[in-house]
Length: 409
Image (cartoon, rainbow, N blue to C red; front, side, top):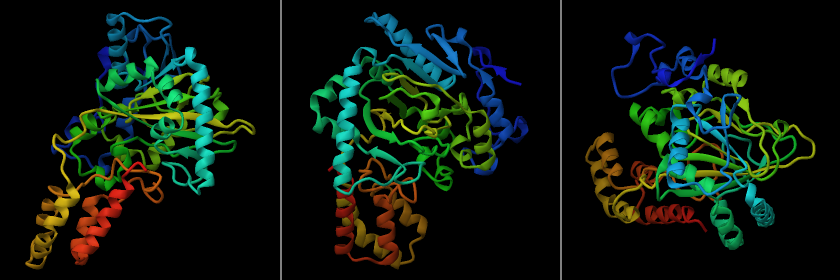
């Protein structure tokens, strides 16, 4: 039985399996708390068009908007942004914008040509390989397509990213001063679907790592740091495999711990939906939404999309710190602490305050996601150096190599 999701019923289920007495009293979530019944209560909701009056229609539970055909007044822009933000959080978690590039199809074609040129250049140079949530080499993918496009075709870049729909969607969810990154993705005929997943940040961690983050980070921090999007660079009927979504799945609190579990994969397989796209359409969605690229079952259509990860300006420290310098400076003291019986916790605490503990941002051409979602962090390397008793020169070389892999070129 599908329940309506009108505003009066926009509560977000917790991990209590519908029994308040079983709610966890601590601030951390565990994979063992995942409950398919509670998940169903979050996702088995209708998307009510009356809750989103600026939308044109609801298709398979996804809100569909027509791109504005004229310059909007400031109050109209703000109203649309507010509705999109509510769609990402309280609504289905995903919106489709028909005709987002309707007046810029020439720009889309120009960028498409540039992307194919970059793909050929990288192929000739021996590049290619890793992909997130898909078999390595199954697709053609350009990592850091934003920078590569800017260098390859500056005019095409400026015309393309002057698009008002991308800017409005980013501002609606993240506010100003956001950071755009992108990967161009080509799925060839016969290309298989991705594994269902959630996205960056917590979606790129293992469950054991995700469990270390408090519940409020799962529910209210990670999803609000990024907006996922895609621009269709060709017509994408369903048989070409446009992205598969499970509307309302961003509302399940344990989703970052649940998406790898077989019962959730099976539910996704039975209940997920797709929306066909035309060239120049765009989709944007909450990164906590369960989703996966679909299978391209055609024999003659290469599906190309520009995948957008747009990040909040606020996910950065206030001061610039040379953490490699700090790590090298304190390394002898860390070795001394380890030799004198310092606890593993004490060492970990000192390293957490000094080295870069997060693997991103990185250069995914060099730090390919093969065999995992995140490469080794600077802090991981420093911990290993202490555990294995490296000398300072060896650590210095390792840290310089680590930094070189994090440069964009």
